[in-house]
Structure formats: structure tokens, C-alpha cells
Length: 168
Image (cartoon, rainbow, N blue to C red; front, side, top):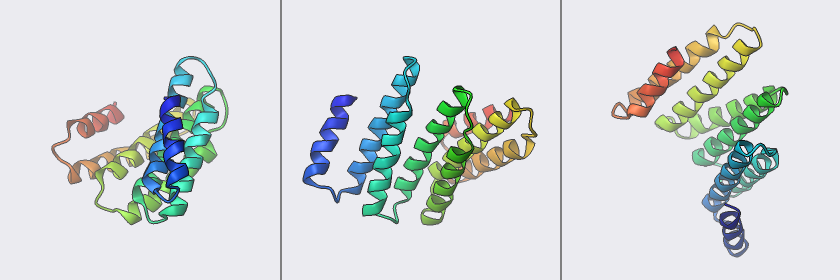
């Protein structure tokens, strides 16, 4: 993964205006963070680098739904890392929601944006429940978002499975 990040860096040095390369390097940083988290290492520096890359890509292409959706998933990973460390994921959840709201405006037909919104709502519901707070509204929103994603891509069994997991 580190070689992948380095390869993207070389490509971006030659073509800094290629927004998708910024988004993909962000995805490589994000995956690196996930690996570090599984190894018991601090994933936050890699997640922050992913967010910085997505932000750089959005500076190049500010109307990119993909860029906002990717950056939202990176914020979700920050939220999970903070939650797992006993910290407050609230601002990361809020940043993810803002990015997803923008992505949905830019590409309202995307089932993947709806699915990411549902994942955010589900994660927020689980966090609220773990804090002893009322999570019913967040669970209901997640189910609604999964249903909306399914309405756009009825043949995707993973979306149906995720909606079912949210109902559990």
C-alpha cells in the first residue's frame, strides 16, 4: 500500500490536475489506515492523509460527487477510530453527512451515495445506542436510505443484505 501511495504521488507530481488520482490516492491512504487499525497501530494519520487527498481532488474538480462520497467514507473511518479509542466521533460524523449531502445534490441517481448515507446513519445509530441515547430515528433513517439505494439498483443483493442487517 505504501508503494501504491508513492506511485500516486509520482503521478500527481506530473499531473496535479487529475482529480481522480487524488481520490484514488486517498483511497490507498484510507486502506493503509484500515490495515494499521487491524494491526493495533494508530490509523488516524493515514485517514487524515486520505481526507487531505480527497480535498485536493475536490479543489481540482469541485463538482465531483465521487470526491465528496469518498471523502465522506474517509470521515467515517475517522469516526470509527475515534469511537474505538473512546473519543468523540461527532465532528467526523457531521463532516461525513455534509459531504454526502453535497454528493447527493451532485448525483441524485447514485445508489452508492444512498448506500454510504445509510452506512453513516447506521454507524451513528450504533454509536448513539452504545452511549445509551435514543437511536431509533437514526436506525429508521438508515433503513430509509438503504431502501432508496435499492430502488435505484434492485439487482444488488449486498444492498438488500445491508438493509436487513440494519433492521436487526
